[in-house]
Image (cartoon, rainbow, N blue to C red; front, side, top):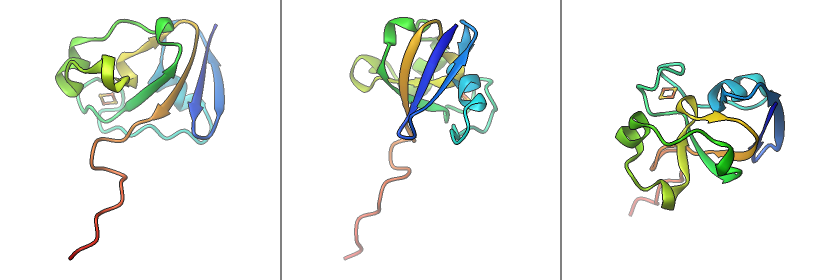
Length: 107
Ligand code: FES
């Protein structure tokens, strides 16, 4: 069994090995992973930041590189629908850059 903790809520869900982080999020109360394609790997919205347990995740995919670039080693951001878990991980929801941040005051 895999075990995924979603921050900042701290909600933890257990799921079979090989479950995507997106599907694990759908099982967890209070975890709303942004999506437009509902797990097909095309919208690039379902971003999560890996806080711990990266070794328990499937390899970075071409779809992820297309949407997120090749800076995973710096950003630690993955597409939850392309990332399968086999172990224990902790992630945080990671909105797109520029989204969910306060706007600077108008001058
Ligand atoms: S849900 Fe659209 S890319 Fe993951």
